[in-house]
Image (cartoon, rainbow, N blue to C red; front, side, top):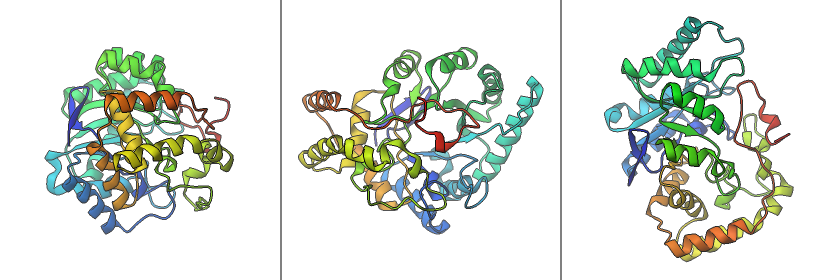
Length: 336
């Protein structure tokens, strides 16, 4: 698989978002299946895996996903790039020393869960309204200098927050929502990241499965832990409104002998050189299908035509790219 840079960290151009093995898409698979799926992705050529300390609630415990990833990659830890994330919690410390202590405690737990002595890419999962992002950046700079992490990143942020953090400790990556139906990053975030050598790591590049054609109005989201019920584009009304976009993706998939999901990912890869999508799934076949987007080549003419036709189509629903710690998933898309 081709490689790209997140700051100075080289990664495969597509990664695997591992969240679904623990959280977010209904019932979770057995641990052995999840480990096998991650290793199958590695055998395919993927060397970039994304997790978070938080992934595990409410079905299991915090750290559940990290522990699965740690077990899966143990035989080839030094050959892959691992990203994980931390939260501050409801009542973060107010002092610089307290903030540093808390970040180090979270990192220590993640290192133990992942069975490693370093994290390649350490994200602040959400910016906390009570913790200036510059203070987090200062701690990350120390962790990088000590070799505990190789780089750091922010998730679900806009350009003002990115620039404040980057001025204190250069960012490797920004993990934001970005796909054909959520293109807010194109306005300011991606231009800033391109100018400053920061990678953009889109989660949900297939819009929670809608752009694969496999998630429809008949799909059951009524599981205990299924975030898709809150995705604005997945309401029945918005699925109907966005059908012309899916039809366009399907048309290109048929032309390229690819799947709709692969076209959606290939579009993002073609559009920007610093974009590294991390499609997520709990299904091994879907994971390998998504990674296969690396083999789909959109020509310049095909891409220009696809872009022009996309721009002409209205989008139903919008979640937005900014989320702060403490916000509720039931509020996705409201007042944005």
